[in-house]
Image 1 (cartoon, rainbow, N blue to C red):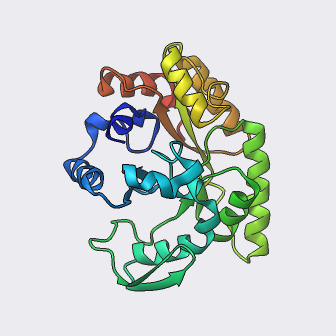
Image 2 (tube, rainbow, N blue to C red; image 1 turned 60 degrees about the vertical axis):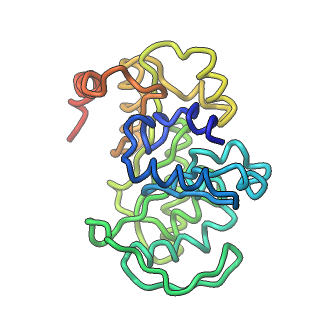
Length: 252
């Protein structure tokens, strides 16, 4: 797994390139890899999974696709039960839980996130994921779908929220967009296709294509965008400046 982790396209995830990881994350990964027992680290707001060799048996058919993906995408059958527990932990409560996903006693998170109250944004485009988002989340940030599919998904979410007696702000619908500045090389293309079959067709190539796609999402009511290069740029400063020049005027 150490080799897989080193070669994984982390720039396409919310963790960013491995070279930019904080020392705390690198230390956790070292601990996970050195452990002989099945162990996984769930890192960041998206609970991105990083696991060791022994954990592969637990991941079963989800391996190797589980590496670098949010927990909610890999284990959707458990997410409806665990996400309220996670939200309580993030809110600073001392939590005990017993269920199909595990049992623990008196768990408390410290230090707490700065944002209060903490907003929970979910992703996913499967029917069950859309229903969960409507019932539980404060916002929706999917990836790898068309503007038309996103608009249809939003309607399902808003309907589910209404049935649950709640609502989600119209400003809390966004997209996580992977993009490439240059044509995608064969090795990266194979990795992307192995993880998500539609990844290549839904990844814009070139900043004009990025802008055009954002404008299409804006036209169907989406207003929050996370832009992720599929490969780490030579200079993040230059990359951010290029993005600002290409799409910055779309901000409102």
